[in-house]
Length: 335
Image (cartoon, rainbow, N blue to C red; front, side, top):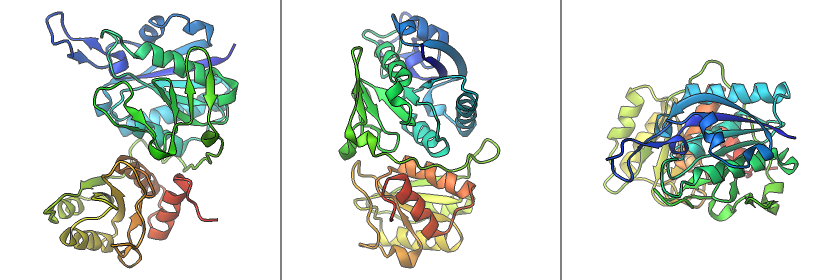
């Protein structure tokens, strides 16, 4: 029987109602242990031999670099020692996509790594966590998942960490992969991978030393945008700025000038978009070559920030090299 390690970090999937008289929607994240989660899922033991470990107990709004590094090191240890045939991480949904993307950037695991969570706490009517955990273990234990790397599994769907994003505040079908589509589908009966998943090429960077990443800020563009947030970020020591730009990663002339000044001060500047789908194009309305900017070919601002942090930590800061990494991470590398 396959061996699956379950690494718990808290989140809504481990949430419990705060009190009997509390609001029907009120709960506290991360109250249940990994063993509690396993015991609540009938038939889970028939899928794999399970080994549970509590890595953290936080709502994912409190997810941090230290937990990310702990997860990466634990997964690498399990894979290198052949201590598991698959890994499942239970996680809050708010920042799950960022953790998944981080792990996909620093790991090229020989075993599948599956992140899952829930939109409803364990104490809720029709909690979705048990089914999601069942399906995540099913995916992690399946031999067809061996070379798929890091994945996200919720609501009967298998997603790539590069493209998946949370699209709704409460709906159980919140996780979508935009125009790239999902990697596959899973339910109690079967697992089916799509053709899309077969063409995924791993992009990895070394896991930096220590347990913290360089400071990179996301600046959200809007109408009547000035330069104050950009100047403040630079004066407070940011190493990189990801612009969540309007449309094709754009912003006001005033803000662009401040970004150009930041770049001259050695800050890595990446233009992403606040729009949910679409790649930012180089040198359309903004002269990226002249300004020394990088564009995000499809990564949302949160994931663009993670990649920028990892690149800076690995001493990759030249705009052309950073652009090459962004292209490679999104499957757009030039041959």
